[in-house]
Amino acid sequence: MSKYAPLTRFLADYEDNEVELSFNQIGDMIDGDLPDSAYSHRPWWANRTDGQGSQNLAWQGVGWETTNVDMSRELVRFVRKCEASADEATIQPLSIAQAKSGLAKQFGVPVDCIEVHIRG
Image (cartoon, rainbow, N blue to C red; front, side):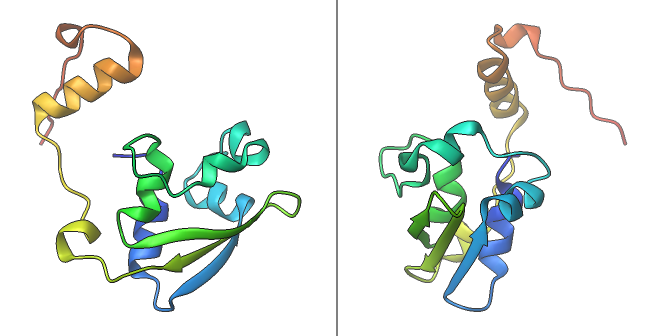
């Protein structure tokens, strides 16, 4: 699950077409601090289309864009650009192979070093 999944769920469920959030509110929402670059590097909040940056997928994947990013006041406004399809609004589950691959990449280890245990 993406670190930014709680933000995705918040925006997907939000009734209005725009919302302004403080950087701290987003940090609280994701149960952790935003990276330093979110506070100092305006492009961190960009609406990217190159597949880079998991944070922008959190809002773009459910039909939102960032606007009016105020770095000095640490505020960002999200605006709904379109209705997300049902597929986009749902966080898709991963296969075990996909999860292992993602974890291996995240931790910089070979895939065969990752074990998944399912407890029921």
